[in-house]
Image 1 (tube, rainbow, N blue to C red):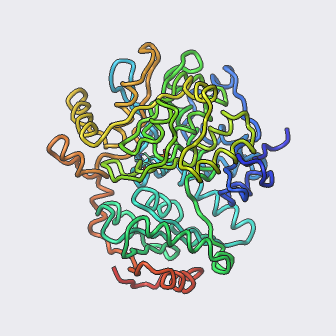
Image 2 (image 1 turned 180 degrees about the horizontal axis):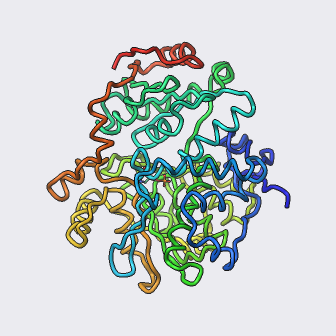
Length: 475
Ligand SMILES: *Cc1c(COP(=O)(O)O)cnc(C)c1O
């Protein structure tokens, strides 16, 4: 069969194969790439996937998305390498939580958050493709926490990539900073910006908009709109469902959500044939998605900080991929809706389309006090300590679950030790630091500090890209 191709949600960008989609990220028309059709798995296929180890399952499920861009044996060894470093033998253990209720622990990767599932594999794919092409690129990103460390862990030491990650100086947690700055690799460059996270993002945008700089350094991004990241996240939905006897039974999932990348992967798994009855979105006070699924109002508001910072997002980029399907895969209609959203701050969605979305998706919002209350409650019920993001997922699942006979799987997206402050406020004690995190405090840090100025950043990028980081750099 011919390889799967990828089309833009706005209908005006070139149709691409997997390799170009991986390296391009955003489509040229401002849209996001999606597969032109969904690979279909029947009940027989699903039964054959039962009992496979995580990495083997990943290679099987990704096969149709990747096509001939990566030969089968190379894809299998990349998947094996990507998940070998996970600290749990199951990679993504499924543990009982309550009656017919399970927790899928997605925090056993090298940086203790679910982003490792995609970035560990996508980092290898980047390096593989670029090495084959004889090219070298510069990844530039801003982080408020989890994404930066996951990208650095995935790309450290890779020959074809330089990584520059900007974080706001003094405004990420100590653990999050150490996870980035203690990585000692010549191609990794941490920059603490004297400013806020928004300043960091503006600097990154300015660098991408400077076309001379962008071309000279071959700037690229590994943000969550990259199709390959979504594809890698589909795997753990199958993994969990197969353990709960799919295809014989339906499964519901509850997902703490920010950019809609994680829960959209669940939607994709369902489109491929996994019997998912319900996808439940958990939001914090930045609840644009909950307001949409509950009241049809997709309205932008200012982002407010919360105890679950990785969900402090108002525009959930990956929602556009769902919208594309809801609007009958009509790129012009998506482009018009997104343009209206940008202009007016309100996404126009008709009653019929909204009802279609609500047939599968439900959503619930929890503020900081409720989040702490749920961490307490889960601890009292089960003895387990969950992080604030995961607590919101569980709470949303309990609030919106339609059928208690259908098993509910709540996704735990971060290790509680990453958010020790919030956990201490909830239950009076911080969770013990895993040895790998505790050890970071003994390691030297590698980080430059720059003022919040494009000139200073651009000069730094030009000086460092393509060359190893100097052996000694200021902390
Ligand atoms: C990134 C992140 C989320 C949000 O995931 P999306 O794919 O952006 O919806 C939730 N929890 C944690 C811990 C994260 O790091």
